[in-house]
Length: 265
Image (cartoon, rainbow, N blue to C red; front, side):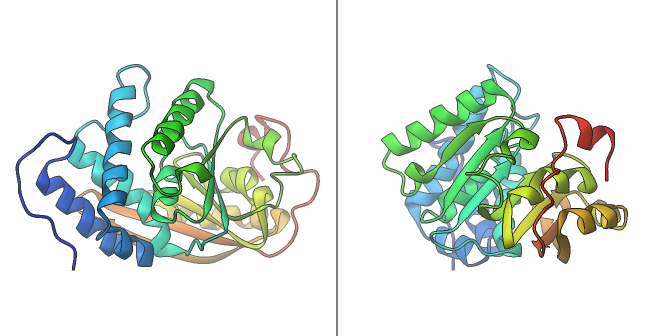
């Protein structure tokens, strides 16, 4: 059982009650990796430190509209950890976070599954610079798995054409990037055959599945299941659409930068 005593805010970014919320939420939402992490002080400290660095960087560049520490725990860290309640990420596997932003969910996945390798992809150079500093600082702090993080600056439409990136990932995740039929063109080319894409959506996300039939057929995907969660603290429902790669993506996809969004499949 996970628990944390104390309610006051000490020297850390989170109060004792907020750390308890983090622990219990990981156990509830994060699958086996979350259960293991809720009893690991080093992992909890690293997750807290990630939030603190995001809050600090947010004064310099706009990373998030959510700045209250308690809300950040729920809507960023626990929301990210819920990916591992929907699918597994095993030691030695590779995951890609498309449109990583402040490192959600990619950094959280790396901290929870330190023996995997997570690549953070973003098209914004300033955000990538933050992620690079964050990864280097995690390594300097001796955080397990931090050395596995890789940051890449580029657009998904371009990166998915590179030999070292195309169809090389066991898991591809994207959070709040685009509607599903567009998102699939950004993500499925990166997935290996048999790999999975997890599209992280709000409560109306399942409605997008019906519009994505052609994109799934063309790009080689198949909806495996729709995983619903309810975040704590009244933060609402989330829908994680799990897509399995069942056929190789044709070489003409993804199309040129900007085309998938302008002309969805």
